[in-house]
Length: 287
Image (cartoon, rainbow, N blue to C red; front, side, top):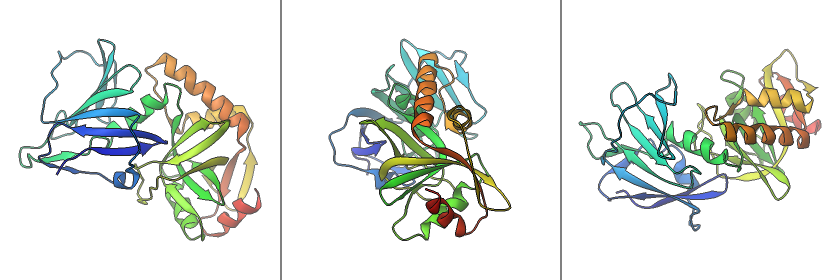
């Protein structure tokens, strides 16, 4: 049965409030691990098979992955579709993304089965836009917490994020908070890394967070080695390994400033590595 669900993304409690209780969600992934009892800072109202109608127009931004962005009466409309259903999800959000409505659509064969409102791609798109209002950034990388500190292992597909995450899983006391997507925020004078529910092929996702100690850019190599990067070099590399709202000039201004400050404050290195447990000791001994 559908019910009110509050989850924490980057330390922000967000409530999903369904308009009725009939039906159930599919594709929840690891979102249940992020459920909290905190008072929500953001409420999103979920409408099940209640269609949001607006006059079709040329999208302000569109991707081949199957989603479109429209600006409509000072609101942002995100429409997701797939090969068998158009749309599958529609999100209508206020300009600051602090409130909104998500419309879910079910296949005719399974009329009471709905995608989880913040599943792919709506969850990432909503979070990216929310963080872009001055709260932080969503990165394409693995996140590890050990001994009260967090490490971000950034990389594009195939760079070794899942491999690296699995190696850290064997270290007693280490927590892999995600093997594919993490949030970083600047809070109380420090940069802090958070896990997200949207894991990669390794299926690793935890809601934990810790101050960000170092950033590594993964690269397959013939030996374990580190190459320190300047803040400018690191910011350029991170820009290509992050989820950025290219369609919004104000959010892009914040993103570039955030990257500059983060790379000035946190040591960043290119990490060439061999895919075995020795790289874990190598990273810890180089700290």
